[in-house]
Image (cartoon, rainbow, N blue to C red):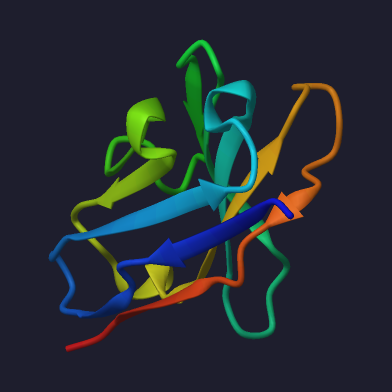
Length: 118
C-alpha cells in the first residue's frame, strides 16, 4: 500500500521558517510527481508547490519567492522550505503524489498543521 506521511509542522512566529517533509512508502518514489497543498479553516484546498520527476517545479502565487520545494529520491522524500511566514500561511499542509502530470492527484498524506502566530 502506497502511503504519504508528512512531518515538520508546528507553531512559528511571523517572519519565521519551517521545513516540511513528506515520505512516500510502498512504491518507487522517483516515479511520482509530487506536490504540496494547503487548506485553511473555511477555505478551499490551495495549490502550494509542484516538483516533477524531472525536477521541474512551480509555485502558487501566494508563496512564490518565499517557499522552496525539493526532493531527495534516495530518501523517498519531498520537502517544502517555508521562509518569511505570514499569518495567512496558517493551514493544514498536505503532500500529494501522482504518476502522470495530466492526471488528478490521487495519493494524499494525512496533513500537518502549520500555525503562524505571534
